[in-house]
View 1 (cartoon, rainbow, N blue to C red):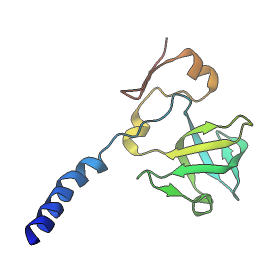
View 2: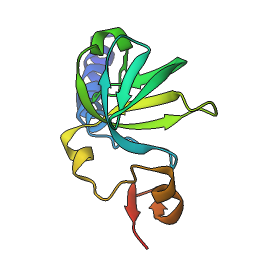
View 3: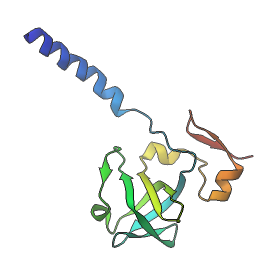
Length: 126
């Protein structure tokens, strides 16, 4: 019995570092921007006022879900998607490595004209 427990712990220790280094996959619709959280659901996105949708999912740099109220007053570099009404639907706070991936579209027009490699999570300008 103790051997089973010890082997399970050893396996978890080997897998944990690999999980921590996993690459997050962003959807093709994700745009990059600067988001400053005011009094939720109000935010400033790329210098323009915007609203968080009622079902917004905000993921921190560790990919854990965050509540918008905990981010009040912070200015963050993010990837985000919009819903059909123009409200912010999904937000991913970028890690330093993710922020280095350039170029990344900041407008829907750029996203439509650039090529996206979903596996490598990179964009290429035409």
